Image (cartoon, rainbow, N blue to C red; front, side):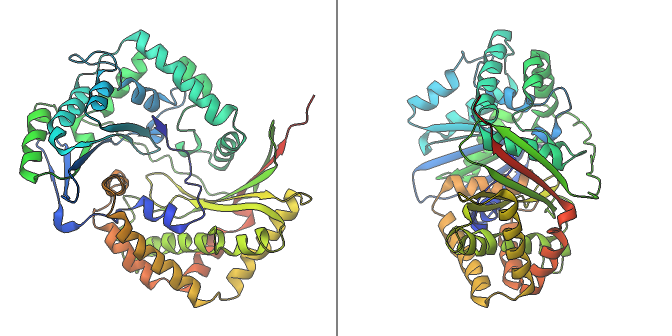
Length: 455
């Protein structure tokens, strides 16, 4: 089971933008409906291979948790693989394995997702299995305590004993004061230790309800058959009133925040975060004229032009050029129910201090925004995005993941098609405008990481 980290830390615009939107599917072969109990069903007919993918999304993630109970969404994700009223412990995974299929699950800020891929002849089996655990999970205390230990070990590997994981956790906790995005998706260690089986059961009863679930089925299927099966296994699932979600808006940042962190590690590095615009359920239509939409996409283009691992300005000038840096990458959020962010991750070369590297990066960014970069750079980003749209169609799982991101953030299915049209209109002036508004020293949060000295 996976925990999606706070940030998709990637140098490519294609990685942190295209992989976060709905590009690969064909609208002609896609249908959606909402059952009487509120469950949302999306079907993608794609007969290019005799396989089918099912992804079931529960629209509740770490940003829906409360202080003292962080990590409950992820622990429950683990519990979903245990037992139900009709299935023994671990039977779900054993059946998928016998069918020659693959399965996994993940927890993110916004959602918890479960997915399987099997031969098309086993469609009914995976729908039946998933519907069963969505409705009939058994809460066994021994199971719960075992899974807590598994999650604590996972946290140890990903964060407590991982300098980069530890640093990102500290960075977000410092950068955000009010928003729940400041809390780690996996949860704080003490919170996990003190979670009870009742906490998990209440989370299940509160969020694992049909009017908070989306089922996506893609592959060699017939729409009518899928509709019939979903109604058969989810039809009696009772709709429940959902809890109200508090806004928890982040207050404006009024000065730079700076922290130092030290732990056993090989290399020092620096992380720098700025609050950035983000596309949310309230952002309006996906058009160039919409300022929020335009700014988010322009900011993503800026991230690519700066941090692309092959052609990025920072990489060319500081990694391969002056060799002040060993590595530089940029990542961002762009679609979320929470606040947005733009993060730079840089490791200096031997003999370069963190302060010197930070200054060099600042100068490169200012220079880029002052001096118009070649039109070829912008055209390259646009060509790359369009090419990736075609490549996405080769993977059923990619298509499903793209849709899951869009629907989990309250956006329309055709936003993927629309955002490419916005990208086509993005200009250098758009990039400069949002870049200057976002990348300001007094609005940044900086984490300096230094390897701990040996005793």
